[in-house]
Image (tube, rainbow, N blue to C red; front, side):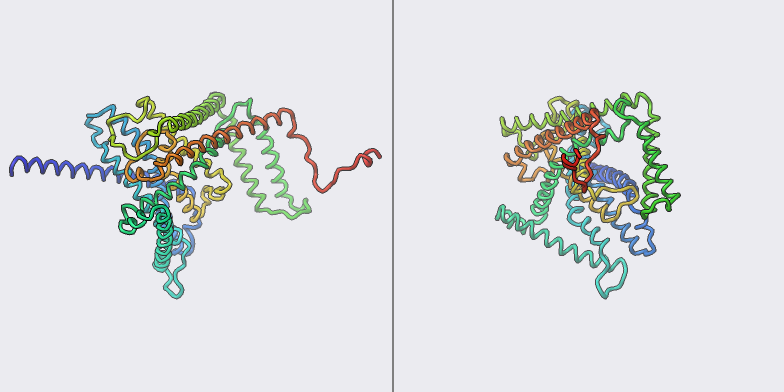
Length: 488
């Protein structure tokens, strides 16, 4: 062999080893996310659905739970995708020739973006509908009972649903662009699936537009419930006494049911007693909190929330001004800049850290706002008491929210990191009016939610300070006496 052949062989070997290394890293990352999500879901599943007398139902629920675990792992990977890319870019800028980070390169990041895009399509279009139909199926009439019969019915239902959805999306694409609809028939993988995912992502971005402002306003109250407030703002002794009195009254009513002439629901009373006991234990723990935790932890947490919320609104306002001044600030796909060449923040590494923190903060706020919304209140999971269909619904909603997070962050101007892979092919990202109205709506809704929350808290404190909350309420059904009657 000549020297040129050895060089070609060495290049091929290097490419082969890099490909194998990327596959191993991707498998390890996904396996870690899968294990974490499996542990998380087992804490919320209903144990009676997996230990039933009918082994067939238990097997079906176990298969559906594994599919939900896969979907939730993909959702968590979508959340970590943009922060991991931003941090990787800063690491490559700081240590460009370090031997120990040679595995971190642009090819690996692009591969992770493509895998998340592929698995998100697979989960939303096939796996989650399959899991739902699988848990609800009973097999065709006249067929042999068993898991295999359920599989046949689920596959048929999934094929019909897939044809229906694809037909609706094709009609929608034909209305928007007739040429594009013809291309989608000839090139299903390169055009049709990205267009379908673009529609799902657009719905996710709209859902984030509604849930995130609500969550930003709710974060203060949720954090206040988790942390111990200073004694100036919270009287734990009064709450403990009230809880003890209520528990004693309920216990006395349970022990002497004949003393009350009304029929009593003993099961409901027992649940109320257990809830009061749990509340009393939590209040005891809060009372035993140290002075540092009470007087320093709560103010610092509230200050951090206030700073992060104000910073998010400020960045969106600056982005709106940039859109009005220069249309070049529009979020687009890849602009040609590869990883490790230029920082995507004007403040360097410090700005990249702020971007990552804001992205995580807005994602947590969107989840809090999602479960605080009256429309999705029934989907809120309960500890060891969540049905399988409810777990499937939660996984689908979380995947829709998390897969739209990169587009959401780029649209609001939280980061200048260009969307990689098929995420940068969304056509509506290049529409100036959609992006501008989205930013304006987000800023307006966030401001209204925060003003309403803080003014409501001030009103409640003023009512409590003046003692108006202790005024007796008018009793309905008894009309007020006239002045003549009162005089008599």
